[in-house]
Length: 310
Length: 243
Image (cartoon, rainbow over all chains, first blue to last red; front, top):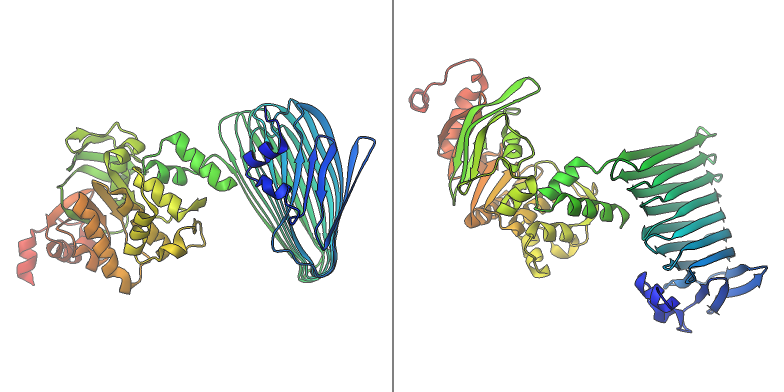
């Protein structure tokens, strides 16, 4: 049983000092309570709790460019808990910020982590969001992040989601991104499904603006009785818009089940959307290469899986 | 050290080995020559355990290894430098060389292996073994990983492919270093590389039809191998006399 957020945060690879340093922007939530919220110059953080739901408003002021990320920690240390978060993020013009989020559910027996996010990336601003999940081994966690993201002209988004530690539980990831002119959107999801995990990822990038770029990348490994359904959709509408979907899934064992559905829609003869997907067992050439260096099958498989999810 | 005896293999209806036999002694660099498709890389696969022959024996240091797994053969000291540039997403050069070394290796030793093949360690430690590496870079990393493994028997399948002519001397020196630990079975079409071998054999018509010095093997290959499916082979001396 993990007793403190600091402990869980450190186990998940975070530096817990960052959560207490007044020079570093941070937000710490445990269960359904805000433990601390620390804004820094150029970033405003407001929090509120209503009807058992958390409301977080984060604003990045125009022109502020942060070299180091702000730290977000969404933890549930209680074995049973419903955590509902409403996130309202806006970055103003010419800003740049990175958010390092850790979602920690190490003791979960029956935990719900639901997030409704509205994110607006301002003109010519950069937003880099990296979310790492740390789950317990067998508990039931329901992870339901939904987001509506708007990239205003010239904005850039890099969104990385990683859930490779512990059992996923049930996940329904649903992101909708609207890309205006000269924007760049890169979504990357890495998930390791085990036991009876059920993973659904739906991502839609609507390339509305001229010369907008979208890349939806998915890296999955599933074993045991886990299942995935990946639905990536890119709509190429703006002149010169380019989108690409890239899904790689490795299945280990006979009972796991993977489904990938790339949806490419183009409504402009100057736009282009492409996709590639590979679903299957461990690549035999990669496996043989590692076996030929003296690894056994299990260890070689682990190296390949870890590499894919790194 | 390596003894292959009466190997037989048919793949896709084609006779690949017909009672093929071969010996490689400790300290040797044994070059296998042959036209494309004659089974040189297949031979490497059989020795490594990737391909199971219909019959025949493979002995390594006196032990029959036919029934050993790929992994166990590697643990015995048989290491293949792969012809194909295999990529593994997320695996760095440093990690790959460390895995290949099996017995643990310091960063300094990895650096030394990379520099031996003409790569600046600082630039390559964290490079991922993916398709962003050129064929020549990947080939050098492969050779560095074999060097790090200190194999008793290294099978090098076209270690020179994708390597620029200027760097060939460096690659040849690495092959010699690898051989100083044990033996090398060298599969190549590159004449300069063949010349560093201590002995060469010509694989043709599903068996080693001729063994000798590299010069003899090259000569014989050039003179006769393009028609070897249809004629009986004259002895090397006759060919030499005819010159």
